[in-house]
Image (cartoon, rainbow, N blue to C red; front, side, top):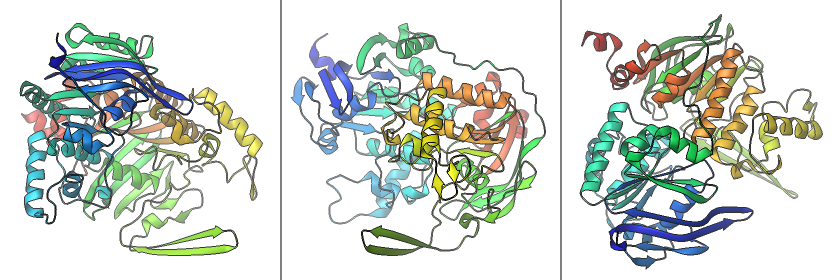
Length: 551
C-alpha cells in the first residue's frame, strides 16, 4: 500500500514526562476512510499519543504526516485547520457558557455578531441527526457528565473534522442509539472521513473497527484486522493475561431493607424536575442496577441519597434511619437541603494578612460530600476528580478524608500522621493501587488507579450501603474486572449496593435486579438477562414495561 492511502501517520513518536515514558517509539498509521480502534490499559499512552496528533502536546522525537506532508502542530486550532478533531475523555469545555457557545469556540466565524437562533437551530439539527440529545441553551455546568461528553462529540462534528478522534463516544447511548451512531460512522467513512475509535467496550470495537492497534506501557504491541480478532484476544493483548468479562457470582441472598427511597422528587441544576415521586428499595446483600440514558435523573438520585442535593418531596431511609438532607454523622440539616440563595464566605490567611471573600450565588453549589460514615453509607461519585478526590492532595490525605475526625486517625484536634501513613500503605497494597508511594498527589494516578483509591477509602469504612455512580466509566478491562470484583465481594458480605450505570454489560454482569428510569420516573424492573437488552433499551427511551410487553 502506498503512503498516499494513509490519512495520517505517526512515525517513531516518543513523549516523556518527568519520571514517565508515556510513548516509546510508536508507529501508528490510519488509512483514509477506515475506523481504526486504539486500545490499551489506563496509562498505556493512548491519550498522550492522540494529544500529540491533536496539537495539545509536541512529540520529543518522531514525526507526524498528514497525507505524506510532515506537520508540526502547536495548538489544537492548527490541528482542526488540518481537519483533525478530538473528543477528549476529560472534557475541554467552558462551564459558564452554553452548549451552542462551546461549539463555536475557536472558530473564525462568527466574528462580531452571533445569531443565537440560527446557531441553536444548527446545534439542535446536529443533535437530532446523531442521536445526541442536548439542550443548545443549557450551560455546561448544568449538564451531567454524560451530557457533557455528548457536547464534546457535537463540537467536533460541528467544526467539520475529517479525521475524528473519538474517546469513549458510546458511553452515554442506549443500545439502539449505539446502532444508529455506528451506521453514521460507517456512512462518514464511506464519504472519506477517518475515525480513530478509542473505547474499552471490546464488543463495540469488534463490531465497528476495520483495524485495531493495541498499546501496552507506551509501545505498540499489535495491529490486527477487526474481522480477524475476538474480544478475548484483544483483552489478552491489552493486559497480558486472560480476562473475565462476566464476574462469577452466586445467587443473591437479600436480607433486610438497607436503603429505602420513598416518593422522592427533586430539581436539577436548571430548576427543572429531575425526579418525580420515585420509590425503590435495596436490600442487604443485593445489587440493584439503575439503567437509563444520561440526564434522566440518575445523578440527581445519587446526590439526594448522599445529601448533596435537596429533595422537594419524599424520604431517604438508610438502615432504618431517615437521612433526607441531613449529615448522618452529626444529625444536622445540610446546606444542600435548605435551598435558596447561597452566601459563600472564604477566608484566606496569607502571612500576617487575612482576606475575606463573599459571593452570593443563586444556584446551589455542590458541597463536599457530607459525612455518611456513622450510618454506614458510602458514595462513589461519577466525577472521580472533581467530587470523589482532592487531586492535589496526597494519597494519604485522600484516604483519610472520611476518617480524620474520628479515632484512631483523629485525636482531638490532631491527626496521627504515622498511623494515617501506615493505613494508607495497607490500603494501597490491598486494593492494588499502582503508585510510586503514598505521598504521590492523586492527580498523577491513572483513571483506574484513582477509582481504586476512592473504592479503598469508601469500602474501608465498612459501609452498609454503597451508592456507585458509573464506577468504571473510561477504565480498561483489567481495572473494570478488579473494581467489579470489589463490588461483588461487598455484596457477598451483605452490603446493599445501588449501581448507576449507562453500560448495559456492566448492569447485566453485576445486578441482581435492573430498574430503568426515564425523565425521573421508573419505567419498569427486569431481571439481568441478555435477552432483555432490547426491552431495556425501549424502556430507556421512555416506554413503560407494560407497553413493552403489550407490543
